[in-house]
Length: 476
Image 1 (cartoon, rainbow, N blue to C red):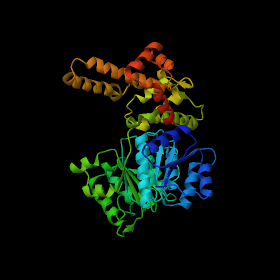
Image 2 (cartoon, rainbow, N blue to C red):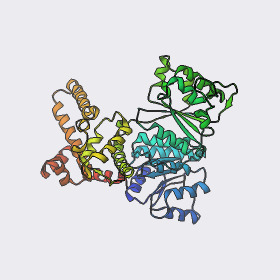
Image 3 (tube, helix red, strand yellow):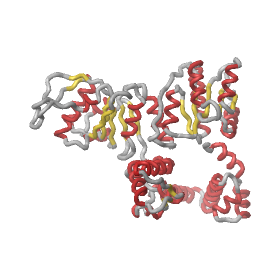
Image 4 (cartoon, rainbow, N blue to C red):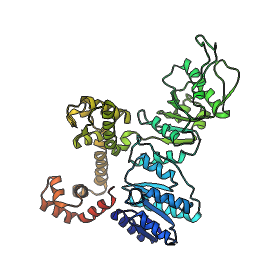
């Protein structure tokens, strides 16, 4: 088997991947820059089985390297790595034809599984190019958001109907706009309509238009949203609230592509891509007889689930900083920044309004916070006292469950076992936090240097390994 090429200017990333592949007896060759890898190709070297490359490096970027490989070896799988986990990186990789996109820091087992899939793909020579470009307003490093970015990339050359599900305020319209912007219809209109916000007696006219004299007040012919979106994308938000009679009409349009204006007698042909969204459980509404099952199946061709903000807490600091900057720009004032204490508290909150609520909070703070540094005391009172019940109690519930288990199966050793487990986790995480520096870890925990040294020995903690692991997995 030909080797896997690893191209990354970060020595620690190369070291981790080299050790992992060597352990699995997968041949490899590593390079510290794209220039080195290209020099081997130019010198007549044999191409790899799989290419694994970082995006941002001195000299040619990973995307430029990807382009060279796609031109010369179109079936060779290329995995793009990056510490800059936003939609721009993800969709740029897919646009260039990447096999997959691996955000840093990554789980070693996940990376290995991905490499194995790429090797299998290479052996069968079926690596088809993917697609896309950029949209900086959608941000996220959480694994759930990476899946959304991948879905947008893979949908870009398709005209399939898409159903976006997610809680209110989670950003469903942003995703719909991203799908449209990176599709062949990008130059055509994107028309959005919230089907829950329009009175049911006006919704039919809003969607399909009406003829002059169709009803009282219809003084002139009017185009509906289908006509306005012709050739482009029609986004139907809150589709779960659509009245039953309009569900029937929409089903007919999706079935044969024809519809009538209200009061009209001549059918109109539409070439519109439908993207629908809802915060409701459509399957449940089908079971309750509130939503047509046949329409559900017509809409549910490709489903994209958008995670709630509490499912992606690691993205809260990124989003909060972004929204503070955005609000300052919109208001024409100097930008503010969050203190670490305030950011940590935000990460503990269950935002019921999701990203929209966080954005509104940042706008409020831009106007109302007295200083340039936003402290915990500057947050609205209802948020200062709000802490996620899940974040506060999940570990306690898990601990209680473990206590119950040990009380039955290991009575007499419960305190000793749990205390050791607690101290091991506590000290391990402190060492990871400080990069393996024991004195600093002891100070952070509020214990003495001799105490942490003794505990490390008693508990069998390898502080150096923890430091090495952290160094290798940190984003640059």
